[in-house]
Length: 235
Image (cartoon, rainbow, N blue to C red):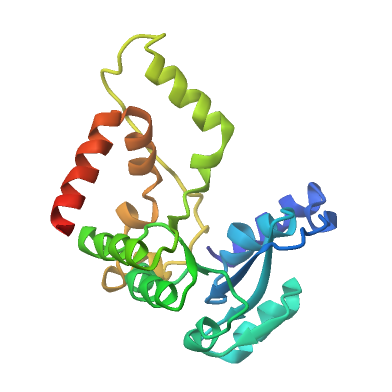
């Protein structure tokens, strides 16, 4: 996300008084750590956590300590680290948000789960199917949750549309076309999302179209068949 997108998000938050919302936290909230001082952090995690009683953000880490400290100071995060490994070593963290370049998702998700942390992984969850299988295997082995950060799947409106499609009320699905557009300037031309060697590209970072298509028209038996094949590979 570029500084233009960050600015527009800030305007939206100001207009809707998001920064003024203070939700009392429960006695035992999920304690998040964040790997990378990425520009997407405020929109993807900081704002949602601010308005949720069952979550808090404890530290943020970056490859340069100054970047982590700057973001921690700006958003009221208690601690900052100049190393991802240092953050994962902290015993008071329950879960880790991973907004790193796509090519690093698998490596750090597995490291985090190995350190006993649940992981919220920015989409796409991995660079390829093999890496996705590695993450799944690690989650099973460690008993940790590995969740791809497609927030829209938790929206009630999405569930209503899914129920209408499944009901057959308006007939059978014969064809589906999906598209996603970003305004010019949303991402700078040198953004990591455009770098092939970092697993970038429209089919990766804009994978909402694939996620939505599969969710809305993928039959339940398809999920069962995929699970069966994955289990067979595990055996």
